[in-house]
Length: 305
Ligand code: 3PG
Image 1 (spheres, protein in one colour):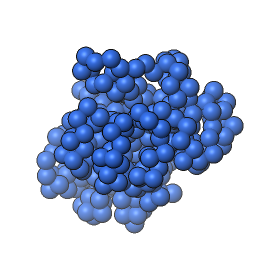
Image 2: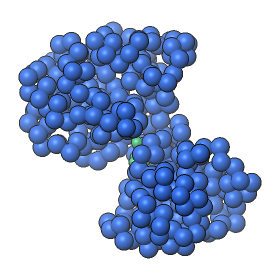
Image 3: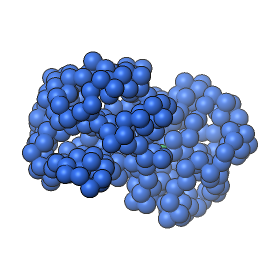
Image 4: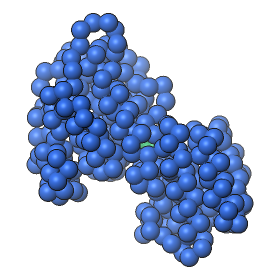
């Protein structure tokens, strides 16, 4: 079987080597398409692939149409909003993700960006500390749980809301569960977003919600840019000079946010999961899942059931 890694934003070299070992060790062939700039390159490369490993790369209906031999696609990572699941299903392709494999990397970045934020983006002026601050985690999945673990080490008071996670599971992790997302924004000094981009969550982080934060509130987004209602957040930050917005996913309206100097920071490229460890974990998990699928039809991590 031919397994193709297609990544606009490549894995660390060690991850590619780890994937190669797994794939070739199972008797399959590995092909590599990295840093491609045109969709045509992807469409050409997938033509004879039996399996595909991607990151945030867009697996559109066009990709599934071109990939005549494709049987399985694995998104090495958590969020699979970049895969057209209906198209995958229509072409009889199993779509999977690798949940949890890169969550510590994202969580560490959250805390790093938080220190940067409360220390005024290291501008030399007096800032504040995280100890004793209330941190709200919106969605208590793998990343949210890792953020909670690390934040507790900083001495933060940690709160969470997750529409799909029972309160007792949140409380068992030593985190205070609140009833809804409004309560999270009302209660916390800082809110960190860990929701996926779905029809329900897109644009859900809006004026009314963020405006519930008390003075000096900080919003951190390492989830997906689509969950933010950018126009409304810009309006709110224009009205409230106390709010900060920090993200590793450049918003579409980056230039407008950039006007809020000292209150807005975005990394040049999405980098939460951009560590050697996360790449190795997610990449090798993807390769193992593909091997298990070809060996015995294993579809444990299928997301288009
Ligand atoms: C994920 O969904 O796993 C993260 O957002 C990481 O995405 P990336 O592989 O594009 O860095």
